Image (cartoon, rainbow, N blue to C red; front, top):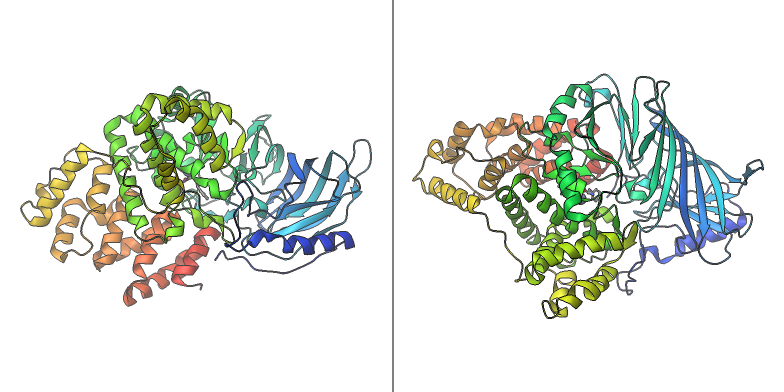
Length: 635
Ligand code: BES
Ligand code: ZN
């Protein structure tokens, strides 16, 4: 599905490495789903992580916008954790590896034999390196360059940026795209510290999810240090025409100058959120928390790169109505970045916990009324998605063997995961669960854990202190069975009950659109109003809503998204120009994939989808384009 060229290729290979490459390809990475799944085994790495562990990375990369390549060196300090094997295997995807060198203190670098094996579907290609001995700890340097189509990088043209004068580069490494820009063990169970030197064209600023060292470079050279060990999917890089504006003493915003003031205003509560997070979940272990506003083509809402969340500009609504995204990415500083999923099967430990923490931050900062509305919107979104997902994809501990782990990104790990914790809270009580979570973050800090490790810890701590509150069968149902258990707690929102009443009156014709009691409705109320309109509506109702509230021209991107879905399924053509402009200006997958999908359901819609896709596709991220190629068709 991902648009990667499959190039089976073997480069300069020593005989020993060749044999190993053959055995690598034979490794049961694409195990048939019938074989028993091993908890804790990462089926999405080609690296021999059971023999070696990367402990430190030193990057030195030049950012070349003309050739759309990063080029330079990656020094890996590696520890042997088992055996005496002489071959180190790393993950790569579409990297041009020029040389591998052995770096011994006080000696000249010594070239090592290496080979890049054949591409394995979804996983990239193994880089096998022949080691000169069986040292317990050693350092090697890989000289390499990325390719312009690297799946984890987007090289954004000036026209696609806010300022339109300079190019922009950013990475998106989760789930397994770090290997497309750094040769490493691309597995969430391998944590390493890093340092980096980045060389960018004059006038641009380079950033990483790391601590900048030595102030902003005036010569285009930027240095970074990351003293906390992180998994590879949190490696992040960006370069562009970027300014900084502080929010609080530990928080701030990086953005293009054209949007930095609006961004800083929108996210002014970030410092408060950080303080709230600390009071609820324990110390913040990463130093600073800044956000970087990316171009609108960023395929996600946000990405929790440590110290520097990457954020879509589509949430800058002007009224802070979509800032739950910041609460979410910040919450990953505990769930995800501090305690990390060991494999992509355990992904819900990252996301479900994070949505739960996000909701608690929102309730603390904006009050329970707003949090309850967001909770109910999430619950409904889950219900709707469960109705469309095959049973195997409805389980929290999902089997993703042989698949792209990005396929596991549904509402299940997020919302079912969150409502699992909410259910647990209802059984043991809020205070005990909250205390347990603080202990959990402290206990597993800087570790990567499996679902089974979580359940073991839960059992020995929380459930031991609160016996007979939940049964093993209930836990099994939540973690391993499809659907949403009947014991799930549906969020109650008084505010949204009012919206239900207003919507019903409008649909029954007893209240005109202009008479709806909408004074004081927030974005969440509008989203709930729109998301629960009937699938098919009379044209007159659509026109009266549009006339009263100008939904077609809504500037809030979430409201516009909901309205455009309604317009597509009701063939409401006054919205077409806005729909096209929306699809051409936004690349966030969640906001555009459903629109294209809905358009493809009718012949005329499909025609319009293909036409707008042809124009918009060059501006989309490779991840978004790959998703859409499968829906709209590759050009
Ligand atoms: N870590 C995710 C984004 C992600 C997940 C990227 C898996 C690639 C693979 C991030 O924290 C996230 O969940 N983003 C959401 C935000 C939302 C749930 C508030 C998004 O992008 O929509
Ligand atoms: Zn997340």
